[in-house]
Every structure is written in C-alpha cells, then in structure tokens.
Amino acid sequence: MNSERLQYLKLNKNILIAFAASIVISAIAADFFANQADYLNSTFTLIVDYAVFFSVFGGLFYFDNRKKYILENGETNKSLLKSDLIKIISSLGIGEVIYTIVRWSLQYYLLLLNYEPYMASIVSQLISTVIYMITLNITIKLTKLFKDN
Image (cartoon, rainbow, N blue to C red):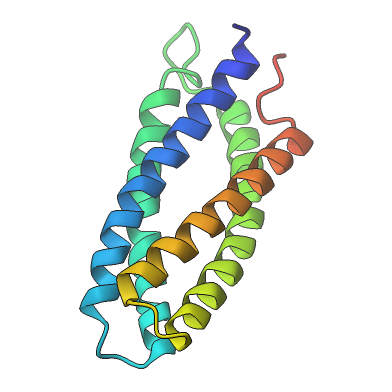
C-alpha cells in the first residue's frame, strides 16, 4: 500500500476513534444536561464533544506522525511541519464549521421533537460525522496534505 493511502487510513482511523469516544461522552453529557433548555443542552453537549474529540484526535495524530518531521540529524523539519499544520488545520477547520452547524441544529431540532437527550446527541453526531468525514477527505485531497514529495 502506498504511503499516501496509508496516511489517509491513519487519519481516518484517528478521527473515527476520536468520534467514538466523543459520541459516548457526549451522550452522557446530553443526558446530564437534560434539565436545561434545548438550546443550552445542544450547546453544552457540543462543547463536551469538542473537548473529547480534539483531546483524543490530537494524541492519536501526534503518535502516528511524530517521526515524520524528524530529519536524519535529529532536528525538526520546520518547513514541512509548518506546511502540513496549515493544511491539516485548514482541512479540519472547514469540516468543523460544517460539523458544528449540522450537529447543533440537528440536536436542537431532535430535542424539540422530544427525543431523549442522549438519543438526540447520538443521532445528530452520527449524521454530522458522516458529513464531516466526506468534507474532510475532500479538503485534504484538495490541499494535497498526503502527496509524496
């Protein structure tokens, strides 16, 4: 398997693991905030979702890529690191904006329909995650993050 495809697989694996962790914790948080107004429940749950997602994803991404930016002399390849950070932050940022809008709106709507808070959280996050994954992979392809030099 070529290096580019392996990098896509690693990134998607990290994202899916981070989403799995955040789905569980977000559902618990949504249930915890069940006595709040629907818009507050959606907002607090989204905050918990982001905290868990970025903590898990950041750790996994670091472990998968920590050796990529080390030169043979032991120094850090700062230009490659800077270039890749700009590309990954841009790709994640675009995906996160779309994810946030869909996730919050859908959870709020489901709460208005009297879904249980944990179920509204799970359903909205699963649908948002699919949209996020599609958006992220398209933007990563466009930014050429994993192109071999």
